Image (cartoon, rainbow, N blue to C red; front, top):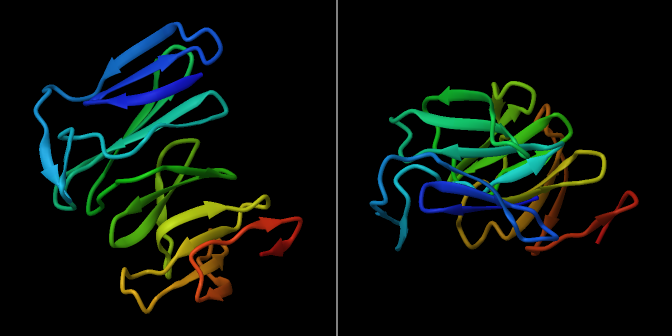
Length: 181
């Protein structure tokens, strides 16, 4: 299954045959709004992440407006759940790791949510920017600020947010078989 965001809609096509499977609209307008030097749909600000035949996507614009997380059946587009969140700005690539979803918030710490029901479990303190999950579901994240002097990556336990390791003077890391390079 291949999914892509198209101005407020998500389209799913069969990966091998390229045949359209479904398209679902999540906004009521084709109007684009400016954000960080680009034009974006008024609501959808994440990509689509597919995990265990579930497609996850989120809509958000400002922290004082309600944000939404959808979970769909990736094959049929049937809604499994829709959760509302306040005080957050869900934007950027959604990471699925273990039983959690991690969604960036621009300059704020990423939000952690459960895959099963989309409920927030908190933010990942001491993390920001780009992040990824290791084989054993530990979290690798950029610095919590966007200052140039914070040129480091952190390995953290995603449940507690406890820092396990820091990689200074780097912006890339590969973790394989328990070793970081």
